[in-house]
Length: 262
Image (cartoon, rainbow, N blue to C red; front, side, top):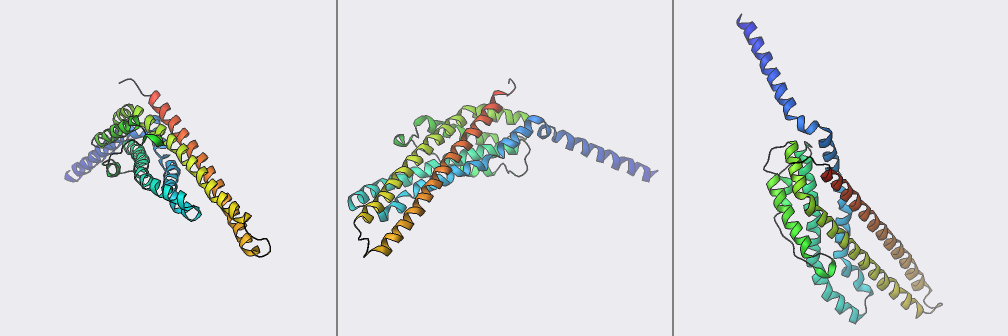
């Protein structure tokens, strides 16, 4: 009899555990949560923006060997501001990706740890009006960091996902707009670098003697081709980064617009 009771008790416990597991997974198994997890999985597509930010930061280092003395003094002065601004530009990407990861974690994606987003939301940014990063973007950044900090303290459930997305809808759109503005800045910087580097090479070749400096001319022409290929590749990366931003913006807007009424 005792053995029978133990067996029945074991079965009841197993059934209860299974039921709790099913209830706990309800939120993560809905079609909407699957869409949210798929959206969160697109976060690495923002890495192209991050890479182009780093390239923008290092523009002076690449240009310096090709600059005339007066241009070098001007570009060196601009470089200090560019270094500081680039830190803020990178943080925008960090906080948007942190938001997407928080969404994925709340929607049941176990590859994300809710503690991870908190690592990147502690530092603020400031406006850099000449670059396209404005006060409205700074306010959106501050707002989104607060929203993420609050979201990671709530239980993983569909309501928490919807609340996070509802609160973050406008700030995220503003930050994606800022990233789009900055990509245009990076594009202009790349065009300016291309004019400096290729223009200097053409000018120097014009003063070389075709017979005496044949090797130097050949080496310069070879470097010209390499640089042209490099700038073409960077242009393609700008195009890809813009497309990724547009895709993320469209998918996020669709999820926000389909939110149930609170």
